[in-house]
Structure formats: structure tokens, C-alpha cells
Length: 310
Image (cartoon, rainbow, N blue to C red):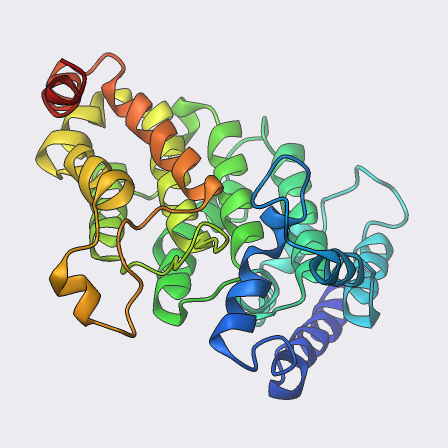
């Protein structure tokens, strides 16, 4: 039954990324940015308070379940046998050829945020259910964490997708929930993964034009770096100093000002990379994590801040 349900999921995921399904949301760059930041603008306490009734209406429409997202809800309930905590089907699910393709479509490629949310919550619940079980080749941590870090993060960078916040939230939640001793048992070199994430962050172009825009890719990269450093604090000096992420955060992400060169690039967003509230919060949070119990990083931070306040 599991393989049949996944085939249906794949069909609905394909339907949700058809051009005619997404064109209405992204007819112009301005509308694309509006869709991208909608979650933060319309949430109390986030973004701009003057977003207007139009954004509120779109937010309500986006939260309304549709056929694709209902199919995922009912399908997961069916293969769980109606039991909320029965997640043994995952071991069968990973045997299906379309499973990893479905992860990409259901968590990154689709613009249906309700479908993304439904899928991400189910995957997170599966990981929690298997948290204390012995690692096997089909254990969710063994299957999902390497694939998400090594494949899906790159997919968000390659496609520049606006609606990847559920994927990054899922990845960070799973990483934070896994005991450090278990992470070390995964087929991953986390030193190399941190280097890769740091490189992605430094090479990531500015996409936030105003404080109303939210670049969920940069928010995700910042959050994943922080989640991994909380598990591997000994890597703070490497990431902050050797990889130059403290300097990257201070200059390019938070406090860089537009100059004549950036103003001449009319089509490019001006610096800094982090203008929106979610992006700046993620950048400051990572900066604090890097400076905590890491003297070299703290010295770099103090050297930058001291001339401003003395």
C-alpha cells in the first residue's frame, strides 16, 4: 500500500508545481517577493504592520487546505492505519524509487505552502518516533539528514526558491533533536558540511530588496549553521575565523552600506544581505553563537564594535 500512496503523492506534487499553478503567484518580481515574504508580514509581531488587507486576504487563502494538501493528510493517515504514532511505514517508504524525488518536490519545488507544511510535520514526527531506536540503513536520521544537507540545501541554492522555509525549519528541528553522539554515527563529515554551508552563505547573492522581503534561503543557511554549531561547538573557531563567517555576518549580512558600485547595478538588490526581520534575527543569533566560548571570534566582534561605541 505504501508504494501506491507514494505514487499518488508524487502525482499531486507534480500537479502542484505545474506552470499554471505557480504563474498566478509569480507574474512579476514584485509579486514574487510579496509571496516570498507573506508568512512573516502577516504573522503578528513580524515584518511590516502596514502590509494591508490584500496581504491578509492572501494569507487566509494560502492557509486554506486544497486538494493536494488534503491528499497528503489523508494519505499519511491511511498508511499509519489511523494511529497517530504508528510510523513504521517509513522503512517501507524509503524503499520506493520515488521517495527522494518526492522529498524535493514536496518540500522545495512546490509553491503550495500548506502541502509543504503537512509533509514537513509528518517527516518531523517520524524522526521523533525513531529518535531512540537503533540506527539501521533505513533509520530516518541515516536516510534524511545526509540527503537534506548534501542534496536538498544545494537544490534551494540552485533554484533560488522562495518557498523553502518549511524545508529549512524541518532540517533545523531534526538536527537539534538528534543527540550529538548519534550525529557522529551518521555517514557524514560535519567539518566538511560546515565548510560547505559557510561557502554557500558567503557566495549567496543579496536577494532582499527591502525590509519587507524575506530571503528564506539565507535565513535557512544561517539557521542550519547555528544548529550544527550547537552540536559541534569545537568547530566555532574554524567556522567563524578560518571560514570568515564572523566577518561575513558583520560586513555583508548585517552592516554593509550600498556604495557607488552596487548602485550602478540597477537590477541587483543593494546590500546588506539581511534586511528583513527574520534574516537579521538569524544573523544576530548565529553571531552570538559564534562569539560564545570562542575567543578568536569574540575578539573579531569586539574589534568591529569598539570603534563605533567608544
